[in-house]
Length: 278
Picture 1 (cartoon, rainbow, N blue to C red):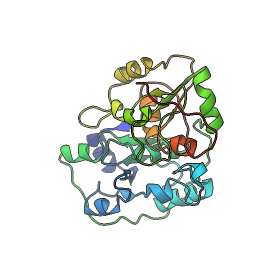
Picture 2 (cartoon, helix red, strand yellow; picture 1 turned 120 degrees about the vertical axis):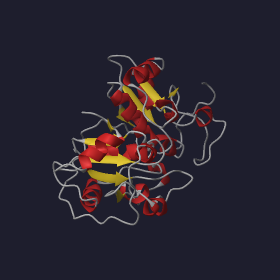
Picture 3 (tube, one colour; picture 1 turned 90 degrees about the vertical axis):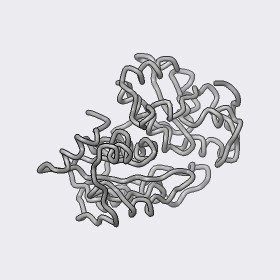
C-alpha cells in the first residue's frame, strides 16, 4: 500500500466517483491550534482534525506522556465525525511536511483503515500545483467506521528500554534535543540510552516531500536498520515519530511506534538518561 499521494493524483481522485476523505491536521508545538489557519484556506472538502483532542487521549497523567493514544471508542467517534465510512480511502496533510499529519496516518492504519495516504509535500505541494483552496469549515455527513487497534506494532516504555539491545531505537527529535543541549517542553533533557538520532526533517527534501525510497533506505541503513532487525521510533510525544514510521514504510521497513516517547520517559522516575552523541 502506498504511503503518499501527489497533489495532482489527489485532485484527480477528488474529481472521481469515490473521492477519499480529506483530513487537515495542522499542528505544531509552536502553534498547537491549527483551526484558524484551516479556516483561512484548506484543500476543498477537507475536515479539520484537532491533534490535541482527537488524536490523543484528553485525560492523562504526565507519566502517560503528552499525547497518549486515544481510546478505541473515542477514536471511533472521531473517525465518524470526520465522515469516514467502512472501506473509505483517506488522505491526510498539514503544512509542515506531514510531521503532524503522520499521526493521523499512523492512528488510522493502527485502527484498521487500509487505504490511508499522506499528501506528499502537504498543503504547500497543493498550492504549488496551482490547485484551489476553500475557506471556512467543512461539516461532513456522519460516518460509520469503527476503530480496531492492533494493525501496527506499538511499544510500551519497557519495550522501548529493551529495543536497543536487540534492534534499533530511533529518536526522531531535533539533534540538539537528543544530545540534551536543549529541552523546550519536557522536564529532563537527553535521550533513551542506546537510541540513535534520526531527526524527522532528514526524511524530507527542500520542498517538504519525502525523499525517494532508496535514499531513505540508505539513510536508515547508516543508523543500523537492516533486514531482520526490529526497529522502533520515538520523539517528544509520539507525533513526529509517526513520520519516521511512515518514512521507514516508504523504504520498505516495518517499524513500531513508542507513543509515550520522551515525554513519558522523562516523567517516569528511575528511567536512565543519556546525553551527548550524534
